[in-house]
Each structure stands twice: as C-alpha cells, then as structure tokens.
Image (cartoon, rainbow over all chains, first blue to last red; front, side, top):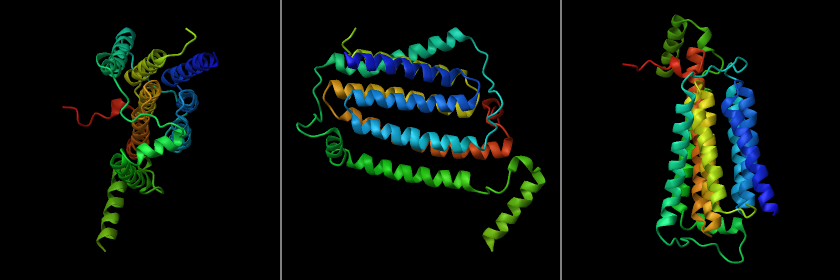
Length: 191
Length: 102
C-alpha cells in the first residue's frame, strides 16, 4: 500500500521534473529541475531495496555532477533564452516513444524467452551494502579497476581542457592576439 | 493497480527515456543536450535496479554503478570541451558547430 503510494508519488514528481528540464527555455530552471529529478529517482532505489545505489545516486549525481554543471554554467551566458529547433512535433514524439519502447523490449526479451535464474543471487543475512561489496570486489573487480582508471583519465582531461588559461577570455581577443599568445606559449615551452 | 510489479518500473523507465529522447531531438543548446543525456542514463538505471530487485540478482545494481561512473566522466570531459568551445566562439549552439560540414 505505502509502496504503491510512494511509487506513484515519486513517478509523478520525476516525470514532471524531467518534463520541465526538456521543455523550459531557461538553462537555470533546467539545471534545478534536473537536480530535483535526480533526488526523486534515488527514492525509487530506496523503495527497491538498493540502499547503496540510492546513496551513490544522491552523492554522485546531485553532489558531483550537478555541481560540475553549476560551475560550468558560470562560463556560459545562461541568462538569455535558449533557442530550439522548430521541427515536426509528432515526428519527434513518435520517434522518441518508438525508441524508448524498443529499449524496454531489449531489456524484457531475455526475461520472457527463457527461465531466468539469478546469476549472483542475493546473500541471506547480509545488508545491501555488504552484498554490493561482496559482488563488486570479487566478480566485478576488473571492471571496477577499469572504471577507476577511466575516471582518472576523465579528471585529467577536464583539468587540461577547462583549466588552461583561466585568466584569458579567448572570445574577447582578436585573432592576432590569440596568435601572439600562442607564440608566446610556444617560446615558454621551448625554453 | 496497488501491487507494484516489475512492469510498473519498466513503464516508468520507458516514459523517462522517451522524455530524454524528446529533449535530445528538440534542443539546440549543447548544455541542455547534456541534461537530456543524463535523463536517458537515469531512466536506464531505474530499469536495472528494478530488474535486480525482482529477480533477486545483484548484476543489475552493478551495471547501474558503472553507468553512474560513465556519466560522471562524460560530464567532466564534455563540459571541459564545451568551455573551450565557448571561450573561442561565444556560444554553445549546435548550428555553429558546422566546421566539418562537407
């Protein structure tokens, strides 16, 4: 009973927030609606008994990803309205629905075709976090390490791309000034 | 109706995925396209967690963790590239990114 009420409440809230995200013309509204939607999605994970996943969702998405977006938006001109494509609305909605149904069918097809049994069944008498740790550090150790390396690469890429020449604004400089700055930098690298 | 099953979660996942795809198709601003991408990844995460719960299998949750890790690194690299583009050109609209058009 309470599960049903919680499910319908959070389903409505999530859909409303994400609808605002894709339809609003203000980038800041889109950002805040997306952050709210992420938190509401973590409620589904708590309902489903995936406590650790819900905590990770709140920490990573609303804590890290949305903070990065908020900092990134300080570089952009977010006060003006966002222009949108003026296409055929029916084609857009139709194609989207078709693709979404296809994705769900891809999920459901293996379950319908065979008698599916649990590959890594849940362990009796262990909490969700404990189970996740047991499976993650035995069966999925290599993907875990690879994901760590990938996050390191992403961090280096982010620093190199965004952190270079924070004191200059390339848009306010003329092409000649940019070339001069580049030449100067080459000299610095050479010396 | 009152008993929440796997189908409910899959339908919710479908709706959210459709919303994300509509966002991808109608947005021009690259920053808002990134937002729509986050919606897609999150809708798939819900499906993974629901299947993991209803089949008593932890593999779905593991995949959801890796999806979250990929989303985080995608944001770091994508936003860095976007900042570089904005410093050079002054906007992040898709229409201006046509330097490779034949």
